[in-house]
Amino acid sequence: MKQLLIYIGSEPKFSEEHETLTKIQIDNSLEWWKPEDILLVTDFSYEYKGVKSYVVSGNFKALDGNRSSKIPVINQLFRDGIINDLFWFHDHDAFQLGPMRDPELGDYVAGFTTEGWSDRWNAGSFFFTSGAEKIFKWIERSMLQRNTNEQDALTHLWSKGLEGYKILNNTYNVGIYHTEEVLKKVDTPLIVAHFHPRKPKHMEIFKDLIPEKLRRIFEINEKIADLKSLVFDAKGRYREWAPYFNKYHCDVVCEIGIRQGFHFDYLIKSNPKQAVAVDCWIDDGVIGRNDSCFNQAGLDRQYEKFKNLMADKPFVKICKGYSFDVVKEFSDEYFDYIFIDGDHTYPGISRDLVDWYPKMKKGGVFCGHDYNIRNVRAKNGVKIEFGVIKAVDEFVAKNNITTFFTLTPNTWGIIK
Image 1 (cartoon, rainbow, N blue to C red):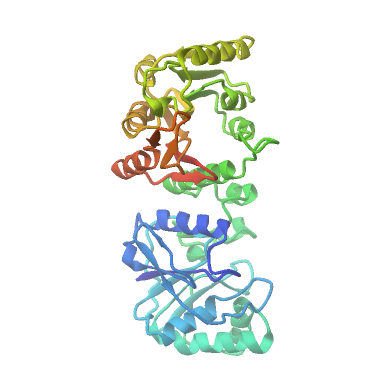
Image 2 (cartoon, rainbow, N blue to C red):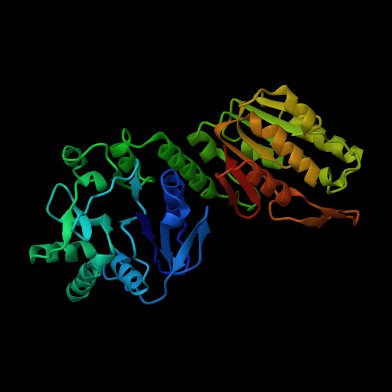
């Protein structure tokens, strides 16, 4: 059996929402499927975790408000000779909850479910084989003649005596309407639930049925989406972190690399229980830690200015020293959030990543600055090679981290 996902949008690229859903689907599916058994069909090249898209071209016309394209694309796959096995097709918001059971089509070439609470057919999750080409041609013809979507076309054809398909139990497709009623008819355990993970009402319906791994995938992607939605201040310099910190109870936060504390001041607008500021404020000749080439007197002034700025904030702990020494003061899984913006040399950032990642709580945000910079010219004219990109990429690969993300214009991040 193979799995089939289809995305044809208004532009030759994923919408942000559908790219997130695609990654969720692949992350979830890899527990039960090999990458080569997941067929992702798009009209542009794409690859994620070994799943490469099969690119189709053509005018897959949106026939109604639902922007139906799945049936025309499946017919294209038949013409291309791709359909040579039993396939499970499902929408991007239909999620596998456990091992897939063979629908046992027998002599039938396709298997569909109804809504479960009505006789209307549902095309959000169905099965078909290479012998189903004629059925899908009939469905597309009916869609065009009736100017309707595939579900209405399929329901119409069923009323006219369409043959060759099997009516499947709703264990393969339970949606958000009349769910309690439909679940009473399901062959347990439920295999496919059809809902949108970014809609709290939908999540509430299936909260007791979603396995822990899929729940964590949802939570991570929701956190990343919320981070990407954060806005900058009026000058466009610093993110307003408070909405995220308040929603996810980021009570213990840290920044490494403070200078005068302008960014740190934005980190603490949610008034966390503790905020740790780490900086050496030392002119030791390592320009990657002091790329503006302040002399010691200038760094001393920055330190005093920052201390005065934080004087009325008892929850702020200032740690004056090198990050590789300060890190020893904190136990593992201590912080909800860490922002690294200190030593930008390759050895420096590499050490910070290794030292501070264990200090993160599971589910916390581990992130940093300058992921878009390879080298800069310091104020004294010396060219500095930043090692952030190389160090972060190596850290992510070495630790097999799948929750890495970037925030424009220059922030990298990991949900632990």
